[in-house]
Every structure is written in structure tokens, then in C-alpha cells.
Amino acid sequence: MRSIRRQLLIWLLALVIVGVGFAGWLIYRQALAEANELFDYQLQQIAAALPSEPFSSVLSSRSESNEGVVIQIWNRNGVLMYYSHPRVPLAPHAELGFSTESTPRGEWRVYSAIVGDNVVQLAQPLSIRNRVAAGVAWRTLWPLVVVLPLLGVAIWVIIGRGLMPLQRVTRALDTRHPEALDPLSDQRLPQEVRPVVRALNALLARLSTALDTQKAFVADAAHELRTPLAAVQIQAQLVARAQDDEMRREALADLHKGIARATRLAEQLLALARSEPDGKAVETRVDLSALLDECVRNYVLVAQERGVDLGIETSEPATVTGDPDSLRVMFNNLVDNATKYTPLGGRVDVALKVRDGRSSVEISDSGSGIPKEERERVFDRFYRMGEHVDRARTDVSGTGLGLAIVRRIADQHNAAVALGESPAGGLKATITF
Image (cartoon, rainbow, N blue to C red; front, top):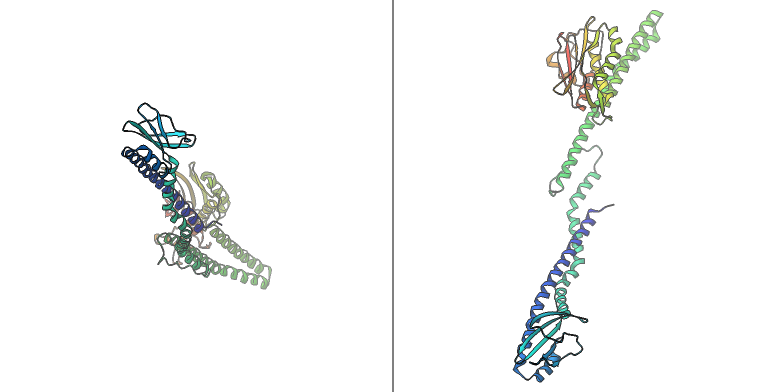
């Protein structure tokens, strides 16, 4: 399992080590430059001091006291008069001023000058200067190296304290009851943790809404199923008490109608549950013209039994992205409602139009329509228009779920549902994608 605390510790320590190494390199380079200036000045001072006393006494004292300094002296005729370290393989000639020579024993810093009638050459190995510079850098950096373990412990503790708000949020979630969906408090939380808590609160709010919707749905479904099931039970009892065949046939007919109503309600409830936001749906390209033609053909016989003329008035080529099964349920509900509430001899027209790149499906009937003040409420679940409303047909009953399912499926497909008045005076339902 990946640990933020461990990763932060590793990365911070790595950055500190890289920073210390880079600082050490800079300190070493600066110390080396200062050591070069110091030792160059020392060579100049030694050369300047030579003419003030006889060469023999100078050389006898300097050759031992100046560590690493090699001295060569030539006279005016170029004859080597003195060589303090004959085993050092330096060039047998002098180049006035400062220069650097490479020898089998390493690089040397050489200074040559004319002193009186002689030429004096002083040389010093660069390894001495490098060693001095490295010593300066190490003495500067070793306290930081020693402190690194303590720094690691301090970083570990500080990161732990910084992550404590996340641990508090975790504990608050772990100790919660499954039904406790009230928002978490974001007080006394760092600025970096508050977006996480706000996202969790938004999720809790959505869960609370979903649970409330589910509870309301279950309660409404139980309430609505109670009536048709009770009616079926009573009708079954009437069948059992029938005294003759005529009464039994009537009771069986009522029982079949009751079973059909309960079945229809169960189907509508199932369709509504599938159209919930968390319902599983497979989206694909759907040919609206073919889908509408299928829905209308499936309801032609039903419409004929109801004495309604059902047909497609206009059908333009159109496709949308969506779930074909859900769209089929939506159109079936609209066609079923239109044919169900249209009086005998009426008509239902279906039209598919494309305007400005938008596809729209219009289903118009010649029924009594829906009053304006109730056109929004009919989309609520289990809502039915009041008894005072004049109905074109009184031989049908609804579940109050058809238009709620239509609205839900339309919302899932980013479509708009509008109810208006049809040219025949009935209801016109328009779905615009």
C-alpha cells in the first residue's frame, strides 16, 4: 500500500541530500578558488623574500618549512644552481609568471620570477590545494550530515501532524451509522482538506436524496399496490361465492380486469425503477423513425379495439444517442395514454420532425386534453387529475406513473418534454432532443 507520509519523507530527504551535495560542491569550488589565491600569494611572497639574504641560508630554511614547495634557481647563463627536490619531475626551464604543469606525479602550480641576476621557480602540487578546499567544505557540511537523521525524524513527525485532519475525517466516517448522512464539519480543517470534505458532503447529499427517493418510491408503490391487490382478493372471493355460471363469468371478468390493472401497475413500477438515475443503460445510436414505426405498429390493434385511428403523420430521418429500450418505453407510454384517453372515433397522430438539427417527436390526440394548471403536476408520480375534470373516456384507469416515466427517461437523454394543445383540441406531447 502506498503511503503519502513515506513518499513525502523520501522525496523531502532526497531533496535535502541533493541540496546539501550541491551546496557542498559550491563551497568546495569557492574554497578551492580562495586556496589558489592564498597559495599563489604565498609563492609570490617566498620569491620576493629570496633576494634579501644569501641563497644558501634561504634555501636551507625554506626547503623544510614550506610543505610541498619545490624551488629551482638558474643563473643568468641558464645554469641550474639549486634544485630543492631533484626527484620531482618538473620542466628544466622557467616560464615567467604563473602556469600549471602536468607531471607523472600530478599537476603542479608553478611561479617563476627574476630575482636579481637569477631566475627563481617555485612549484607546489595542486593536490595540497584540493585537500585544503575539501577540508573547508567538509568542516562546513558535516554538521548538516550529522543532522540528517534528526531531520528525517522531524519531517516524519511534521508530516504526521499535517495528515491528522485526514485521520480525523477518516475516524468520523468509520464511526458513523450507515443512515447518518448529515454533512461533515469542515471547521478547523486545513485549506487542502476542505475540498475533500466538501466533495464527501456533496456525495452524502446525493446519497441522502437517493435514499429519500427510494423510500418514497417504496412507500408509494406499497400504497398503490395495496388497492389493486385488495380488489383482486375481493374479486377472487366473489368468484368463489358465485351461485351460477352467469355470476361466475362476471366475477371472473372483473378478476381478470383487476389482475390486468395490478400487472400494469407492476410493469409501470418496474419501468420507473429502471429509469432511476442509477439504472443501468446501454447507449447507442437509435433510429427514431424505425423506433416510432415499431411502437405505432405494436399499438395499432389496441387502438382499433378502442375505436381510435392511430397513425404516423410525418416521419423524417433522425437518429439520437441513447438507450433504445428506455426510449421504447417512453414512446409506448405516450401512445398508450393518447389512445386510452381519446374517445371513440377519435384519432392519434404521431410526427417525427427535424428542425435546426434538433429532432422532435409529437404525439397529438383528439381527446379532452389536460388543463394548463395541471400540465406540470401530471409528471409527478402517482398523481391523477381530479374527479372534477371532464374525461373523454370513463372506461379507463391509470396508475399515475406513465408521464413520470416519460419525464425521467427524457431527462436521462437530455430531452425536453412539453405538453400543449393539439390542433384537434386534445393533448399534444412533444419530446425535443
